[in-house]
Image (cartoon, rainbow, N blue to C red; front, side, top):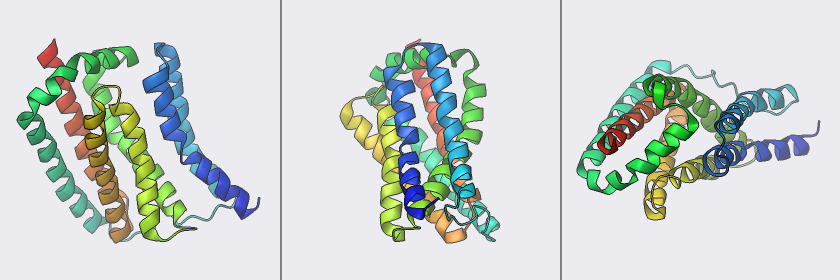
Length: 228
């Protein structure tokens, strides 16, 4: 296949998570349809990069880095900082978040995970964060770098990463808060891209992302409890 065709396919796959999240978080209401769409989206995110690689799309190896120890150190340090910051913000601005607890609880019930919330929380924090680092930091940002310089690749890749979170947040909070929190997520994505670039290892970005996701699930749980 020609490099131009593969590049166009790559660009199309950059919107997979945003389209998927719009379907399973915004448009669909049936639990079975939501879970099917969610699974299909994540499956494409796993296998689209591999399919393009087999077809000749040029990408660096995601495991080429040799600074795994440094990456882990940066990941733990930044992740712990993010974890604490999220919990502090929740405590300081609880009155801002509290009105959104009913909508959060309704969405959790709608997607069918309330009965095994902590299993889902731990699984998503560990597995889904790894998938997103593989997909966004390696596949999308590094893929963009095959045609663009690092800085525009960083901005474009993490803007698309942020778009997915804007769509999700818009279902729970006001538009100003959606923009604020979503942008914070985007800044986190930029940080994880920089850790990956600095060390050549996804380990630190993944660990830091796990800390962030766990903090968000903790906040979500206590926010729901404040409503029930």
